[in-house]
Structure formats: structure tokens, C-alpha cells
Length: 112
Image (cartoon, rainbow, N blue to C red):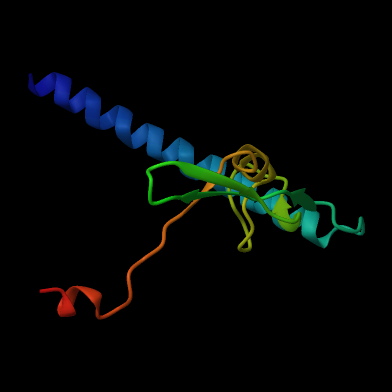
């Protein structure tokens, strides 16, 4: 059993080290492309149409399509400089955004 735990710990350390190397390589490639002369090389503006899912009192959900929004994203594996990766933005663009109506702030304190 001790040998199994030793091998498991070793594999976990190797996996974390590999993840750190991939992240650093991605970060330095992003920084290199930011300094290049090509305008907007690592960054892209994606037009997304938000879809809101509003819960109704009768238990149904009403879907509301909003106006298109421009979202700046980065062409990389991981997020950098406060921007999400473009693959993530495109993946999340079709999902509805849940909207919940919250009660007023003092509602629970005033409830009998």
C-alpha cells in the first residue's frame, strides 16, 4: 500500500509540473505575440448574442434574446491579461444565462 501511495504522489507531482510548464509556455507565447507588430494578433473581438433564462412564478422559464455584445478574448489555452480564451467564450455563447428575481434586502427580517 505504501508503494502505491508513493507512485500516486509521484504521478501527481509530475502532472502538476507538466501543467505549470504548459501554462508558462502559453503565457510567454501570449506575451511574445502581444509585442509583435501584427495588430490584435493574440486578441480577438467576438460578437455574442446573450440568451437570458428568466424564471416565472408558474415554474416555467422564459428565454429572452438580448442585443449582441462584443467580448474581447485571447487566442490561448489559458486566460491571460484578464481575458478569457476564445475557445471558452465561443463555447459559453450558446448557454442561457439564468436570471433570478431576488427579494428585497429586509424581506427575511420582516417576514412573520
